[in-house]
Length: 160
Image 1 (cartoon, rainbow, N blue to C red):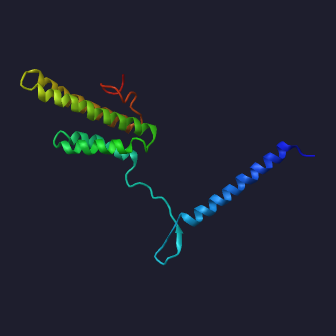
Image 2 (spheres, one colour; image 1 turned 45 degrees about the vertical axis):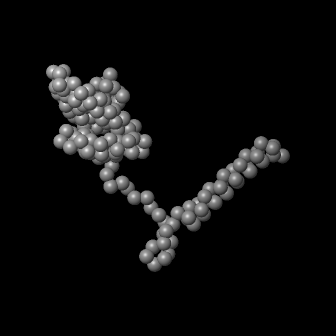
Image 3 (spheres, one colour; image 1 turned 120 degrees about the horizontal axis):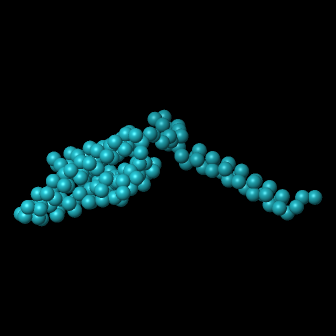
């Protein structure tokens, strides 16, 4: 004689199998699109044109070109914000590091420009340039070896 627990387990197993079969039917029916002859074909997701690692490098390059034209740094910031949640942990740390680089760098730039009429503003702007270069180079070198940024929220160079 079977116990109630055996019967319950068999019912659960049957429901799971039926659910999988129904899911497969739904996928087959709704996850298709007609080809040129009107015959439904299964939709296959395409690989991205540029990998996330390529996008991380692109953002670093856009930041470096940002010294010449500020719009490229803004484009880099937008890419970093849009990609930071759609990637692995290594790229995610780099995107966070890049976002922080932009905003902290903007603070340095504004303070430097506001204090340029006194001598300290020139030093602040010089520090901003060196700081940004160091962060971008450190980020590219870390990405090249597949390492995440240890502390992407750091005001320094991602180490402390």
